[in-house]
Amino acid sequence: MKRIILALAIMTFCFLNAQNTKFGVKGGIQLSNLVGNVENETPKFGFQIGGFVEFKIAKRLFIQPEILYSTQGGKYERSSDDLVLKQELNSSYLNFPVMLKYYVIDKLSIEAGPQIGFLLDAKGKFEVRDGTEPLSYGSGSAKAVYKTENIGLNFGASYDFTKNIAAGIRYHSGMKNEIRYYPSGNFFDDPEQIRLRNNVLSISIGYKF
View (tube, rainbow, N blue to C red):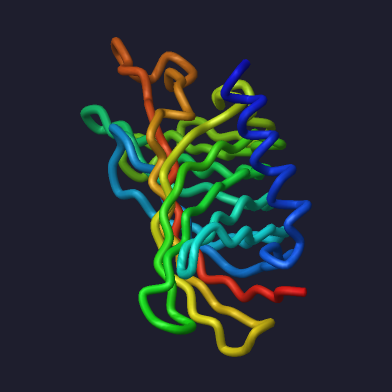
């Protein structure tokens, strides 16, 4: 509780110190991939959009909390003998990164920080094949196999083209398995639990007010 109060106090001070605070919006495209005990992972394109606040805390040092709507997911396979499970998952999150930014030179900054995300929705579709013969397939909600939140670390860089417009690139590495489930049906003998986490590469454009 003390840490929460301290964090709120620091943020309040930063808001009051308006000359060192900038608000902004950002959006961009991203490539996400599901990583875990599966095979033939294929990334999926998605997007992100949201806003941020940039607090100056030293000459070249800034803290930038953000709130982002993000679409993520991926495709993968899981095989056992002649059977192959093909799965595609699509999810949407409300993500809250908090980035520490350092300007190595004028206009060019590097950044790193934690992120927590909260699941909004998830859908999936699957197919089980025996060689070339389809045995089962389906689609629908996949929220039951997801955890309601995930955490990870972000690393990236950005460049300020003007005092208002900036572009950035960022890599998000999931730190915990956010997806856990056993393959459905009776096709796999003694199936192993599938465990996956999301890694995301994003490119964005931002505007500071």
